[in-house]
Image (cartoon, rainbow, N blue to C red; front, side, top):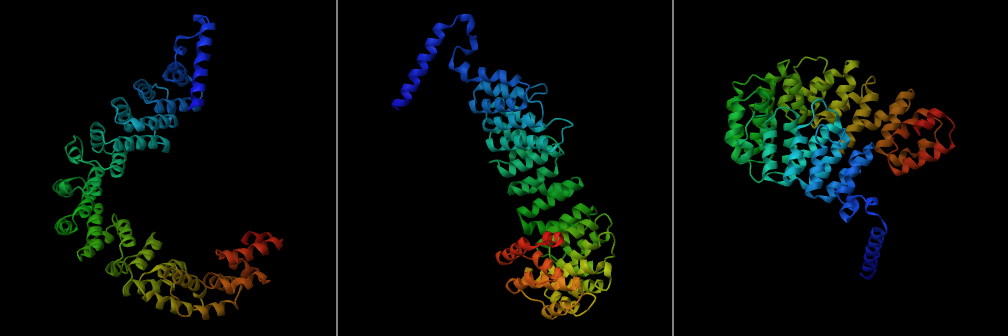
Length: 458
């Protein structure tokens, strides 16, 4: 404390002596006080600097001051002809304003920043809008939340920014969200579901029946978040007359996730609709349902063969497994089908892979798929050891497949491969050297090799 007093006394004496020695005309008026030396007046010239970095530091300084004059300067910086000349500087100014969002001047500036600048759609410009939305939501100020409620009624990216902000900082009262003027957007109905706004059930039910298709789909999803049993009953009624693929997909998803059998015909109609096929495959990849597999087994293949096989594997069931096993006979489809079998939750996939391991034309890739399955499910597929033994006596590609399988499944037994003269075996083992023991052996062999191809593998 004594040292602080000494420093303060010294500074005071220095200022007094300097002021006494200087002529009045030598000392600008703005620098005749500590405010002039360290406050807003000292920062103001920096806002006119030609250096963007200097201007950004000025914004940060104004934000740390937080005085009415400082916030007013920051707000002006965000105007079209303000000191913030590009998206990077606008972001710095918005971040400086964020802690003061409850202040009317700062809040108004953040609301304008949330609206964005027309034509500026690069990632940093979007970050400006998101940051402004988050600052407004975090303030829990009534005017800020009212602005976000209005933003939710504006179709497009601004409503999505408002949705994410309110999800991060939920408002205490959802009534302003329901009463704000403007269009009902997917973002508005989505956030009501994400907030668990039970009071919005009636509003969402009306939107699920009468709004445009994107909003109906979002409303269906929100209803399932609020009350699953009631949403199932409503979805059954709505599904009979619904024709839009996006809404059908939302209805089918909600019903399927709740184990309702009425999801299956909805899924079938979606799969048969060229405009809904992609949505159906997305649903089948997200929600595991063997009844979906029976419908997928009859679906014709198109440009999305890999997705169809992946969906078959995820669905499982006898029909799906039979379709995948049939695809193994076609060289162009075999690997996609094997990969789907490797990740299939149906235990019946073990038997399909075991049969594939016994077929010479499939053995190499079937072994790789069986290894993936063994790692994923922590359970071996019958016939893997025999297949690896046979492949280890084959051509370089066969030997590499066997070596990789052994290195993944039995790392300690694969150490000897690093002393092998067989480059195919050594390189394949190196590709599987993820554990400390094999990695150390690979590093030791790397130090001794001059073969550039082998060195790359090691």
